[in-house]
Length: 301
Image 1 (cartoon, rainbow, N blue to C red):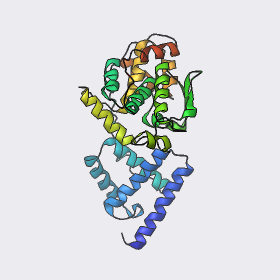
Image 2 (cartoon, helix red, strand yellow):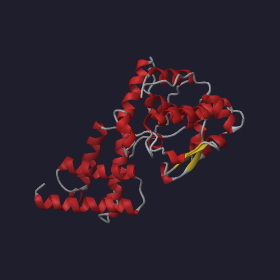
Image 3 (cartoon, rainbow, N blue to C red):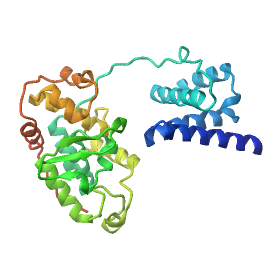
Image 4 (tube, rainbow, N blue to C red):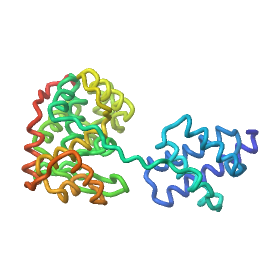
């Protein structure tokens, strides 16, 4: 693009970002939808408002061959938003770009495998992070963004702020996890964050940012591999394990739904395909489940 075209794109791009903000989209959605506009602009080296239907068809054909269906789906949603809210045009490709509906079951780790992973690393930050994410069924971002003020040790529970769909919720806090969080926080004493970024305790003590997402995912996969675990796992697997283990332990599906923050009970019902449910008390069952882990929280800080 020449200088004028670049200025035109920058104007449209900023309108796109502003529209996403006005619609109350999350930071992750804004970045994903904005990336979709940047990607197609880079592909053709011209503004998206100058693309024909044939161009869009060719682009998505190419994208399907080079990226996952998850990326294709996000780009379609991002460009659809751009066309409707910035260009004022109706999106014409709804029927031409249809990701397949794949209903796959996630791989589930046993409590013994999770224990092995936590014990396999000698770094307290990874030990505590994995325990925290698993024992409360938290998403990666929810765990990373935990703050001191979110912890209610008396109840005991944790306040999850702006989770998926910008929804707040409370989750039950197991006593083992509370002790681990307190122990790890004492190593850095950051005034706000429980999982601050930083190479050492001095950097973590003053950091205003949480640990790096990509680095965590990479480390998690390395730890699993070092334990001889060959299942397809990532940090979100811990959330699936939490739901499946609670159902297996006998907690009622309605209580599991509340803990996980699912809006649709059918989402929670996924775990019944992996376990046998009976009814039990929420706090008692969660503590019993987490206490099954055999962990030595003595990682280096």
